[in-house]
Image 1 (tube, rainbow, N blue to C red):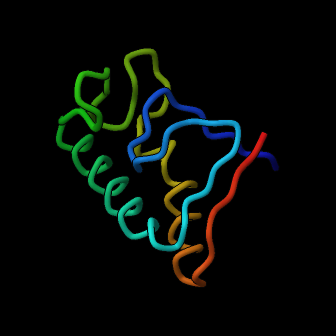
Image 2 (cartoon, helix red, strand yellow):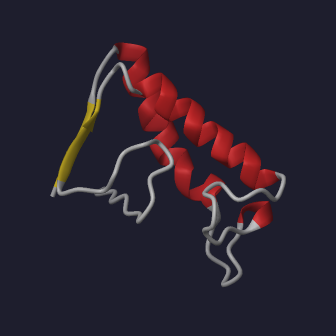
Length: 91
């Protein structure tokens, strides 16, 4: 299954590009930032200043919220950290 992550803002500190990498050194910070944004969303705080968010895990139009959408990425970040591997993507 092909999974595509797209965003105009990057909670984990990476900007969208045609290719990129989250290095092993960046993984702890990326994991912490994503977990923090998920926690903030669950209490009604915006995970990204000035951008629309939806409390309780769903956007106003019924789409899944950050928690639902971020779990696969968070799992991948944690798996990479556990084996000391970078995450690399390209289009």
